[in-house]
View (cartoon, rainbow, N blue to C red):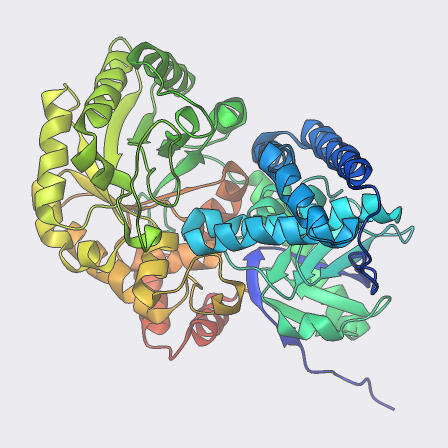
Length: 557
């Protein structure tokens, strides 16, 4: 009798690699008691809530210390949510309305969740995290184990409806061979953290709901394919392929180039001071995206020019002799600043953010450019600056003029909205380079919130419509003889990187862990082959087809 081949389930591959193992599902969150009797001792119940919240905060702080890097920042932000005094006030109010403690806690978190969801964008991304905080607090109240990663006693493929940062950040890659979730998108915490840990991951996989504990699966993180009960021969071939790929990736080094020698600068993204040492040590050609928000967010007052100068100088020193592209402040609207009156906006994702913030607060941009220029003096780093959320050539020209007036000779803009891509030629006529942010460009092209899990298919960077806008921008760059970069998550996908280069992109900026695989993929394909792959992707009817066609043509699995 021949081997039975089951139809694979598929989702969006967000962290490359191939892994095989039995499924172990994430423990289910605690259930609220069906009965909801009022508390007879409201002050005592409030105190029990305080204790539970403090225990959850301590748990998150401990996990943060274990995790380090970007994951630590995420967990610290969660800890701050739990410590918010307004949360206790909400719980007390619900108790006084006659709710039992567990239900009062759930109601209080629901209020926070609704507020974050209504804000949209970055804040909406945090809404799913609030659910995890609720579940952990309710578990403490009920005296049951916190929801978390299972420990079956052997390596496994972790399957869940979704993963909280507290679980993802401290996963042991030696035991968790791969991750498969029903929800999530290409920019979710699960995607970002799995990639940083080097664990193959597939998100937005509806078929994950049918996977039960112990079921053997083969996960292909590059293609988003999950093969259920795979044949032994298929597993053997996949593991051999993965081992060969890992050895080749480990051996790659040096500047990015296609097989026929066309240079493609490989750069890293830096988003926090704590990431600097690891980023600088990576075999990169510099920084393609220095996010400066870390200097402004989560603080009560504006950083001084001198404080900014010291921070930028630290980065420039770490990357001496290499390029550093500094993105000016991308705040406002969905990333509000405590020391700025942003006013009321009915739709923050389409509001006053990025460069638009300078319309209301021009001094903040001037101070930032002053600090960058001062930090550049005496540095051997090649410092470029670029502005976020630029929509028109006039905005690009105004920013470039301001940068040059501050002594910064190379100024560019982000391409994050369709208007900028469609008018890329005119924008490049007003500045020196552009860099495409594929996450926001996808969000605005498809009118789909970046963190809306049920819309993840629209936010897939393989969407042909999004690639059309990359093509238009790349063509404008070639015509103008000016650089066009990509600094979104798309740049870290080795297969998609080939397509981006084929569309005219000249540099790719990503997490440092992704660099070797992208370098290896480029070295295996000529520029002409990249162009052919790009045409295959553009001609596909949808994102999944684009990925499949390119994978087949490029020989990827």
